[in-house]
Length: 294
Image (cartoon, rainbow, N blue to C red; front, side):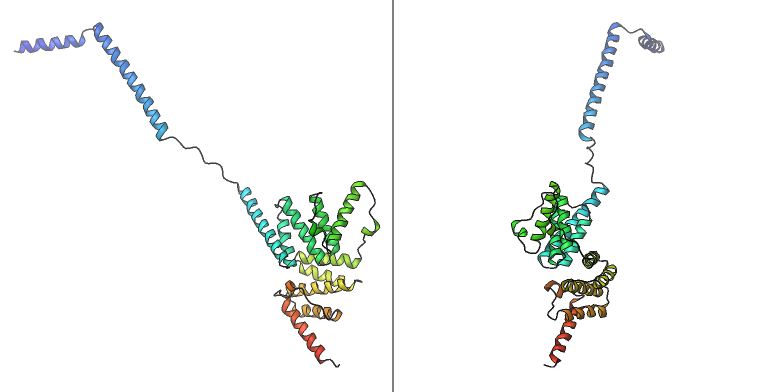
C-alpha cells in the first residue's frame, strides 16, 4: 500500500517537472493572448463608459465683469433720469426737468441720440425761461454732437426757441464757409446778463449758496425789468430751498413792487418750498390793496 502511494507521488512530480510538450506550449500561448485581448476589450469598454456617463461638462460662458455691471447700472439710472426729465418737461416742471436731464448727461453713458435729445430739451427750457444766451449755447452743444442736428418742423417754428435755433445753424454754416457773421447775430452780453446766466447755472447745479451771491451781484447791475424780476424770483427760490423763509418772502415782495400782477407759473406755484411763502406775500399784497384809500 505504501509502495503504491509512493509511486503515484513520484509520477505526479514527474509530470509537473517534465518539460512542456509542444501542445502544452501552444495552449499556454493561446490562453495568454486571449487574456490580453479580453483585458484590452474591457479597458476600451470601461473608457467608453467613463466618457459617456462621467464626461466633464463644458464650462459655462463667462459672466459680465464688475466694470460691465457697474456701467450697465449707470446706463439704467441715466435712462431713467432722462425719461423722468422728459415727463417733467411735458408736465411743465421745467426746473425739475432740467435737473433730471443734467443728471442723465453727467453720467457719461448715454447714447449719442439720447445726449442730443437732452441738450435739445434743455435749450427749450432755457429759452422758455428767457435765458437766450444759455439756450443758444445748448443748441451749439447739440450741433457739436451731430453737425446734421435739426428740429422737427413744429419745433423749428416755435416762436420762443425757433429763431435762436435758426441763428445758431446760420452761424455754423457761415463759419464753415469762412464768411463773417451778420452783425445782427453778434450779441455782446452785458455784465448783468453774464451774471444772470452764471447765477442760473449755479442754481441749476443746486449750488444755492453760490447762486444767492451771484443773483445779488446781478441785481446790483443795470438790467431790464424782466431780468430784474427773474433774478428776484430765483433768488427767492434759492432762499426758500435753504430754509431762509424771511428773505424768500422779502424777494417775492420786491417782485410784486415791480409788477403787482406778477404770478408764478403753474408748476412753480405748486412747489412745496416756495409756493406757500409766495401765496402768503400775494395775499398780504391783495389785503393791503383792499385797505388802500380809493
